[in-house]
Length: 94
Image (tube, rainbow, N blue to C red; front, side, top):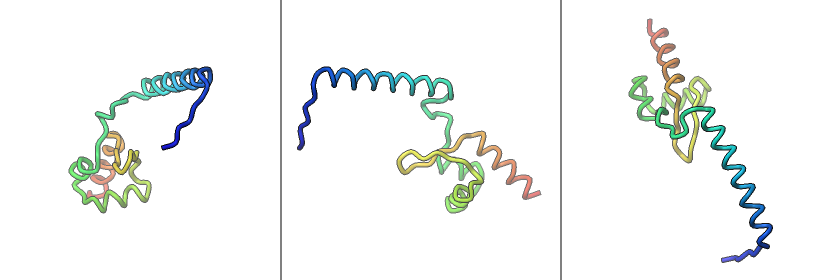
């Protein structure tokens, strides 16, 4: 284990900057809406809604047809984007 020591004034400055950064992130999250991601859908939910396989969903992601966000190893999709994909899918099947 490596121990790093810093002066108290340097530590206080770092903490102040972290607090400023945290406030900016909170503001951005409030402006953009759903911070908890409760309204986002995961792979399984999207596959069920669109009645497609996980491989087809991967193809949509790779082609850019369905926007997504990745957190760690998990993909999330906005319901509005999935709705658009569903409407396109229905229109193509007609």
